[in-house]
Image (tube, rainbow, N blue to C red):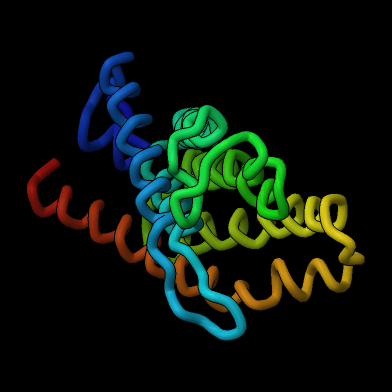
Length: 191
């Protein structure tokens, strides 16, 4: 018998369609809730969305994590108030943060992919599996900002990336600690 690679598989066993649907619903709710939490930072506040996306990728694996974020985006596009500050709608998805929102799908997939390739346990490996995709999220986010705002690449990076790097490093560490704690609790339980 092979050892489970993801924490969700280790906790829940065989991933039936019903279990996967439950995880997707719970994960999209987690991201929606995290979008409503604003952490005061200078120069702009930061939400906890990327922490939630990292946790989902670290826990679910690549495909299920990506599906979860696609469902989250669909919920928001259809008018559910799941985006930051209760925002919703296709227009919001196409606005200045659209590159980051769509990038969440890639971030979740890549995080899960790294977990499935051996970075799913141990704080240092989990940190890397969370940090690399979090840093790559700036590529679609900043590129989108240059398309939908008058900002050039330097201005978009200054507004949409630089203020958030330290926070994303901290959130990657927090995600790694949470998931490492989950694995440790499972080991102590004898699972």
